[in-house]
Length: 339
Image (cartoon, rainbow, N blue to C red; front, side, top):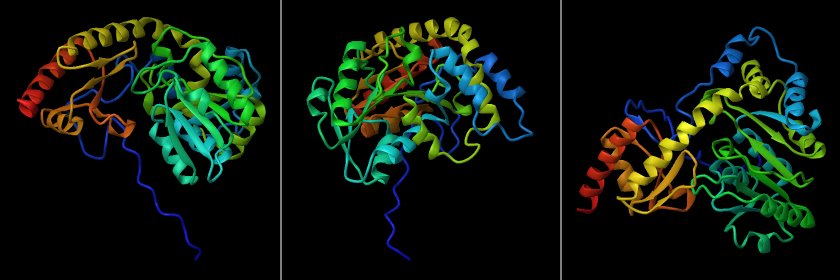
C-alpha cells in the first residue's frame, strides 16, 4: 500500500458534543427564536420517499431569480463546510497559500491542511499587500467570526480586483450577514459568496447552504459533489428561502437588542468586542480555565484559542433572563480564578 498522508484531527466547534449537556449553551451562533416556521414546514413537507432531481434545477432557479443571476451561478450544499472543502480541493493546490483575514473558519483551515497547502493569517489593513503570486484563495468572514469585523463594499471590490490580478479567488463567507444591516457585495469573476442561512433562521440542523459565483467556478464545485448530495428536506428549505423573510424581520431586531444589552453588561467584567452580531468576545485572561469553570456551573461558552485569541471567550446571546444567569456565573468563575 502506498504511503498515505496522516489523519488530521477534527476541528473543535461550539455547540453539542458526544457528551450530553443540559445547561445553558452560549456557544452556538444561531437565532434562538427559530426555527422559522415557514422553513420548518418546507422541511416536513418535502418528498422524502423519492430521490431528488440530481441537478436541483428548480431550487437553483428559485435562488437565481431571487438574486438576479443565472441558475449556473448557484451551487447547493449541505452546510458551508461542504462548500469550503470542495473549494479547497478545486482551487488550493498542494504548496499554495490560503490567505485569511483573521483566523479562518476552522473547517477551511482543515481543508487547506488536507490539501497540504499553507495557511497565512493577516489583518484587514495588510491583506491587500499580501495578495501576491502563490496565493490561491483569500478568505474573509463578512462579518468575521468571532471578531465581528466586516469589510465595506469598496474594500471588497479592491480585494476582488487584487485576487483577479494574481489568479486567486476571494471567498466571502456571509454566514452571519443576515444579522446585520445589508451591505453591498460586488459582482466579480474572482469572488465566491458563501451563504449558510440556517443560523439566521434558527434551523442549523437542516444544514442549508449555497454559493454564488461565476459558472466556471461553480462547475468545478459541482463536479466534486456526489450524486444527490443535498437531501430532499434541505433542498426544500433552500427553495423556500425567498419567501421566508418575515421571520427574520420579526426576530433579528430582538436578537440584536439582546446582544447589545449583553455586551453593555459584560463590559464591567473585561474588554468586550461587539459589532452588532449575535456573538461577542470578552477578554478574560486564561480563556480555557474560564470555559472549564463555567462548564462546571452548567454554562457553555466558546474558547477562542482556535481563532488565535487564547485570552478571549466568545459568547452568543440568549434571552435576557438567561443572559443574566451567564453574567452571574461569569462573575463567580472570574472571582474564583483571579481572586
